[in-house]
Amino acid sequence: MNDRELKLSIVDNLKNDGRLDLEQLEISCRKGVVYLEEIIPSEIEHQILLRTLTDVMGFSSLIDRIQINEPDWQRNDGVQCGELDDVSAQRPHPIT
Image 1 (tube, rainbow, N blue to C red):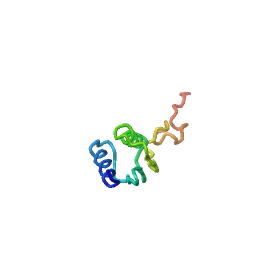
Image 2: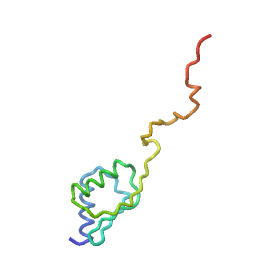
Image 3: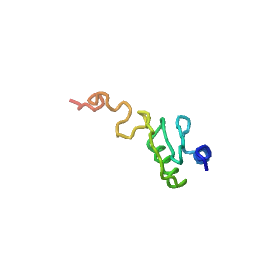
Image 4: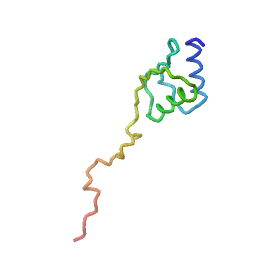
């Protein structure tokens, strides 16, 4: 399989899988090596991509240059939107 056919096979497989947003993902193949570049929306999608290529499709030669662009509202750092506002204003005041 040449590099063009390899890329088409990868893109078809990922489209059929349906779990990834391929809009900003750039996949290229050179001499049998798969190059992944550009932006992907979350680390979860990044892991799905890598596992599909390695575990499902059997690729072992990958160059991963993916950038994760996870929106603030999707972050999983324990801070919810607005949570860093003045906390004292949210505490009940004792009745005197």
